[in-house]
Amino acid sequence: MTRSAYGEIMVPIAVVKRGPGPTVLLMAGNHGDEYEGQIALAKLIRTLEPEQITGRVIILPAANLPAAMAGTRVSPIDGGNLNREFPGNADGQPTSRIAHYIDSVLLPMCDGFHDLHSGGASLQYLPFASMRHSGDAELDKRSLAALRAFAPPIAIIWAFSGAGTYAASAANARKVANLGGEFGGSGIVDRSGVALVEGGIRRFLAHFGILPKDAAPPAAGSPRLMEIKGKHYYVYAPDHGLFEPAVELGQDVAAGQLAGHVHFIDNPAREPVPCRRRALGRVERGDCVFHLATDLKT
Ligand SMILES: [Zn+2]
Image (cartoon, rainbow, N blue to C red; front, side):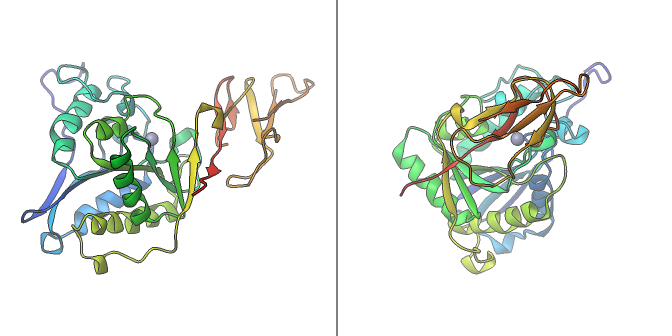
């Protein structure tokens, strides 16, 4: 903002279109340090040909470009967390303007939207795709059908609304069937996460009739449907220190089971503090160390 007075941020966007038909927006780089979606969408831009499709695919592989270029969760230019900026402001800071463009220009064109995330530098996930309850049963039905079509091994339903400033909140307000998902994390690139995104987005496009069914790889099986019911599914560090997990990612756990201990390296004689209710090694009080999901009863 200081370096270039009239400078513009050239956020890359690709549109592949053939004839009338549905429109889907595929987005990654909402958080800059979440890489699997960015890679999969860059590959899709180079390989998707107009003659393969019916309708329109809009691809935004690095939505918060300054954050993606810096490999950081939020923008180094204005400190903006794009996924807390929706619906955005046309006259705001750069991150808020990006949110405003997605919400007011792109989403109104769309039948479907996928916002691809990962755990970033501070979280590690088993790859999963997800949807968030909107309060509109008809819209939720459309999003759930798209989630089943994406066919991840684990499908999570966020059964609480969360902040109203997510990209998902904007898509829900626009009545666009939408998915999210966390396809890796820990600041690395998870090969299985990239493969899941690459296959899943083709099945997602086929679900909307944009790609023929035989242009999408078959699903490995039916997803394990799980839900996250509220903030009580999150486990927080009770103190600062080094977190030693007591359970593995993806392990079945019971209520009240020990999650790990926080060790005090500056005072090794002090007994570690148990944490009951991973990714970050060094934790501060209030950091999320685990979050949980339960099988959805259908
Ligand atoms: Zn994210």
